[in-house]
Length: 268
Image (cartoon, rainbow, N blue to C red; front, top):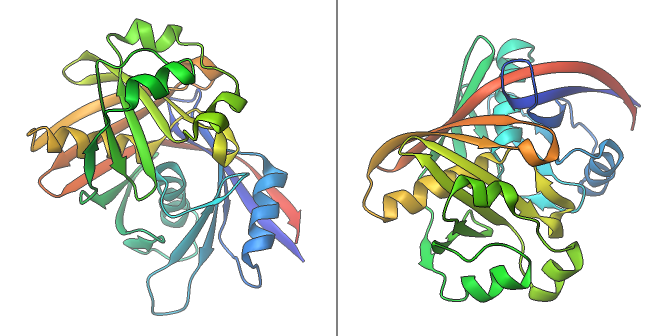
């Protein structure tokens, strides 16, 4: 049956850039295999599907071209914007496999509130793993469970982040490393970041909300119980993006601007 799919760009810089997203608000009759096939067909870093029983919390399922994810930021932000601006319905909460998240939309901006309960661990193997995949020697590093394990590598400077030339996908496979967030502070409130997830079919992601949440969890673990930063990402892949991250106590919020590009009809 024909099924419509909104094509959005999430975490844009004004009208430019952002991370492309496919949003399907009627997943009736679609199983995991069909959802995965649609994600492959669209080819975006993620595609999000809505499953909503009347009276319940809307459930979303998130797929990259390579796998289903328990949590991801830009699909949830994009779905929040879609429901609040285009429908159907006007919920205040979305449920993914990992968390229930509160959603907020104001004009062209959307945000989600995420429980900041992720575990943070030291990463004594970070230097050797970084060297194996062509990433710079860490100034600091830690693992954060999102719940998938993310390796956060802090570089010495934003220029080091920008100049990094990671090894080919095969090197990541051989090292067993996936979900790597490379970042550096430009100022106390500005971060330059890149995210690599070749095991999920996304070698470099233009904008990664879940990684921004992971950064909030790491900073909280360092004793910074509250703060706000603007994350710049996607420049190296031609999709400049901006993510606003705020955290306080046991909650983090990520948000940014959203643009609708088109509606596609899929033969499902």
